Image (tube, rainbow, N blue to C red; front, side, top):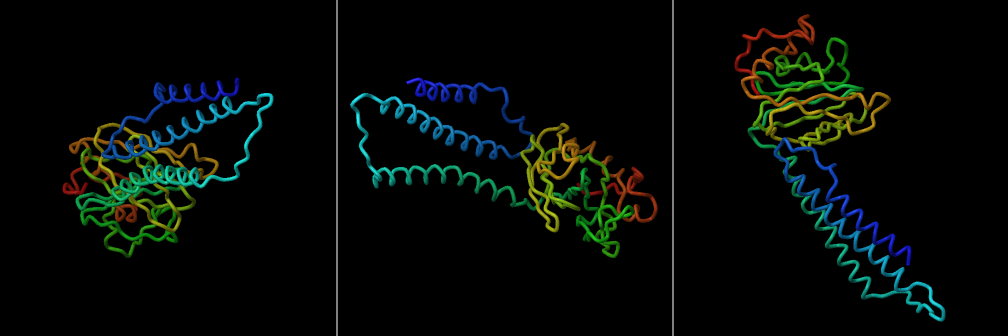
Length: 281
């Protein structure tokens, strides 16, 4: 009897904690509200299953508790019960998977008007690269990475000469413009995660991964590495600052290009603010 009461109380407390808890999603700052809805559907389905199974256990403990003279009836299998359980389980799994597959398809289907930003992960910091006036990122080669070429760009590729380098942990983006995020790791497995944007994707050495989003709220949002990547994992943080277009363009024009860094200006040298007034977003 006591066990049945504890099981029922556990369900009640769990449901109340989930509904009334102050710990919930961070405020959404991008177009990915569907991700929140998909997670909510998963919580509802798993919550119903948890409550149903726990309450059934409580009922079974109470209904079939030990009583003098009572004898259990042995029934090794029940086809009817197995069919019901298989059917209900299949429906529940499909209900959780279908929204996620729809969102994933949208997540990797980049709009044609999206600009490009490359995110580079390395123990234990983030750096970024943007295309120059030609709108195309130059090719890279991990064997070219060095103190004078931290991004590993190919100096023989003319498309990379005007690439804009952000050799810092802060990336700025204009509000309201879709962005394709291209992810690359220089050393080990990392994971780019911005909770308010709902953006999350692994950076796999030797591969290029990507997703897209549209920043919809001005503000500063923390970048986290969501994959254990070594002793300094907890310190691998950065920021995405979403600003108005008028504030974004001067920041962009103040960044060095790859050609300037190779000419001896250094990766941290800022460009003349009057240069490249037509730099792409």
